[in-house]
Image (cartoon, rainbow, N blue to C red):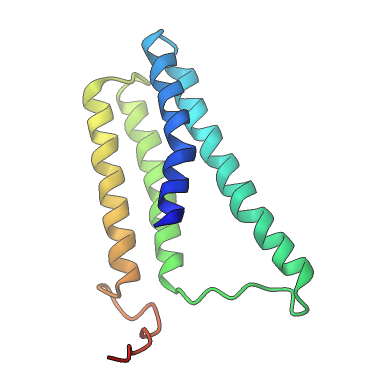
Length: 133
């Protein structure tokens, strides 16, 4: 729960600044702000702790037990390509209908990622530990 609040706390200011800039007519600045802040968060806030962990640890690696991560990553890459193509079809214009389309696409990607991690499409993850009652 704490990480969710932390993520919201770091994303809300970026969202508000993008909204204010877009209202002033600078939609490209709003898009670049959201992309840039997310790329920075992913590279620094995920990459730096993993680098420190691998530097300190004797084994030098971090183990991830999710085979669904491959499919989630491929889904994200396909979504980026699909959104770029659809934006080209929309003549590089950002409007309300395209925003709703992007929101719907985001919800589909999140749903697919959750379904991968819940082993709906196959056995990607090891079984969870049994709980003592």
